[in-house]
Length: 348
Image (cartoon, rainbow, N blue to C red; front, side, top):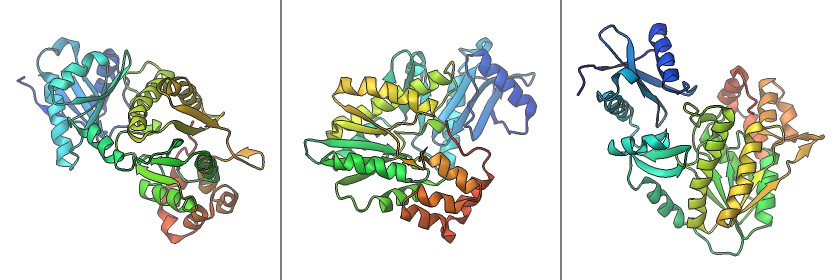
């Protein structure tokens, strides 16, 4: 046990935050843009010598000054963050780490979910967390020759999403729809889920799933120890696919459908990796050209931009009737306000 104590760092503490930035950079870590709590250990001169942060249910951006490594400071940071998470009733915790650090976190009670060699390890603090999730999924397994899957964030659900769902449903015996349940989008999960189900209720061979914490959006994937944006996207794609392959094995899925998005750097890299990796595991990767309206690709980004611009009538040709009905109802007022005040509603 070290002689130092761990303290919360407030966003207004410019000196401490500046020192944290420098410490992280010195240890080869970029400060993640998604953080909602940060702590630090100070030396006798009140200089930051260790730090760690949280975002939702994940521990992030943990580092100890090279001059103080071996003093047990990382144990104290992790213990502090775990206690903080428990205090806000978050008990199922996750972290992403470099492969050479996985054993250290394993000794602190974290277990590997998947590992991408030379890139990243995804861990949780429940020994059977992921296997329990797969066990629960297995209860929805349905036998058939053609079993497909779609992962939808649907922020919000558009005619483009509907076209993708209808195509996959028509070409397969059953379609598993995984709805990204992480609340990191402008449209909350409960509303996204409702609009997906309402917009597809005419199709009778669908099985709906919340993704839980195991499939996350690229918006909150940690970037802090990746060297550049392409490396972040690649790591996220490889990690997501490793998780998905285990899900596919559990449910007998032999095809995954994805929408083409020529304007998106993220989706372009993601789809390329998917089309290379999935067939290795006996899973077809079906990339579907995007549906258009007036020669423009229909995308959730375009819908959000129209809402931000106060052009609700414009989205009528871009979304199913159920989505349009929601956005023209009083229930949508707070979400519309959130979209209109957002700095950026277009995601690349």
